[in-house]
Length: 82
Image (cartoon, rainbow, N blue to C red; front, side, top):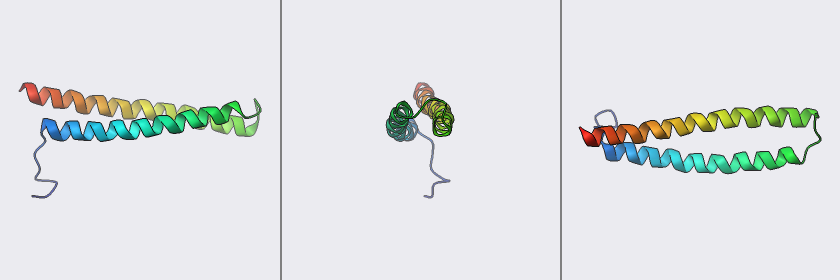
């Protein structure tokens, strides 16, 4: 059975959600490191501005990834109920 023939099950969705959660936790560590780097830069410098923009974009991405995880878990729960 190839991946296109595989049925979507609650277990499959939960496994995917767990994988997303693991990556989200790793990403969170990167965000914390970037935030520390921001603290070590001179305010209003070009480097600080670039790092700040990167940090803000990364925070938005982290929220997006979290919404994917939530969607997968909710979908798994909905399949269990049916």
